[in-house]
Length: 180
Image (cartoon, rainbow, N blue to C red; front, side, top):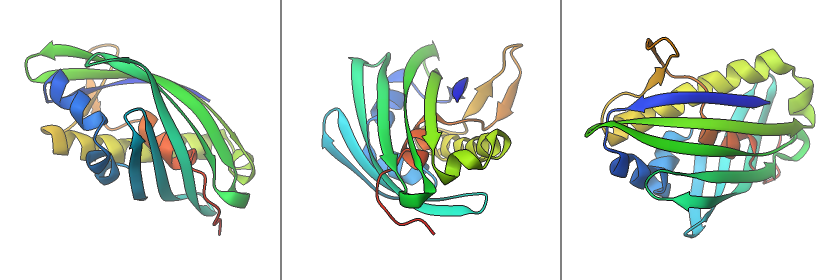
């Protein structure tokens, strides 16, 4: 599954960069996140409980940051599993662009592969769940760093919430057993 999107965050690029690298902020923003630890400056581990349709599982996994270009962006890769619920692995390229002194456009391109029971649920259910989770992530993230996040539409319109790369990678790419 490939996802590309942009979010307008009402905060400076430096503030957005700092928040994207702060496990305490991310833990508050990622839906279902029970634990998020930074094991090194470029690695984090997470435990997230999610429900995707009839499948509820605890996911745990590892996320690695590379190609760091502070405060302009980085590449994020992650993988993990939720026991019998399935697995996910993938990556994203994240870019931050200052639109003004107090507005940052966060753009991302995600490529994720899923397997197991999750993959059997179908693209529409996975996509709608991804939209919901990313909307929740960006609403919380925007509120914490300076207001509400908005989707940047191609025609210049904005809509609240949409697909979230970090939520998807850490939520569906987790790695601890415990599917229900």
